[in-house]
Length: 248
Image (tube, rainbow, N blue to C red):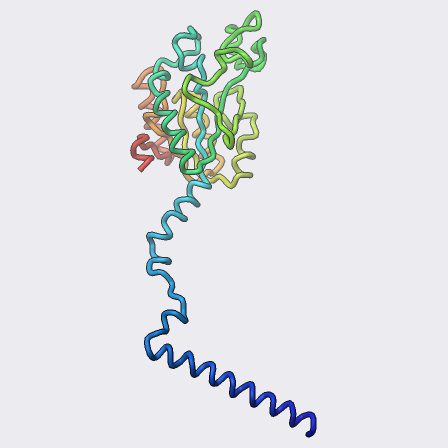
């Protein structure tokens, strides 16, 4: 038999076998056994409910929390520091809770702290008189520069040292945040008219998409000063929820 006829015979046998195979499963499908042949996609797999957690995760992955100056010299009256913020101690629990929520959501937590040279040569001119004999507010290595009791830097967090009011001034904070893909900021800490306000205004100038200040996890020397600065920040588009509102 010529080779081309042999190949044609083999092809006909193959087609007949395939027809029988398809006919067998077609009969099963018509008799109600189709569910075992074609897998079903679970209902709700593409529903809005299933997309929401992914959307939230995406949002939080683009968000950072800046915890500003929550150090003993600023918030612990026991230290007797001239830099004590009168309202600071009261917000320590709220700051700790805000950080816990941030970590649960996978938010990048940045601890912004002051750590000064013992001579005070890296501090603002109007404060240099507070430094002598290797001592002064938030000197690096001294107890006053430690975080307030109950606050801890954990693995995955980031510590940033600043020497001026704004966390962005003369630091690499913007670079760190942009490298992490951060677009939104949540800010807690002390104190509202100085380091909080300056950091917020710089964040707005640097075009972060959403800047938020938790009003009961930030503080100033007096409530009226705190609220006046919160009002100012709201006028430039900063969101100012309470901790409870933010955590919903």
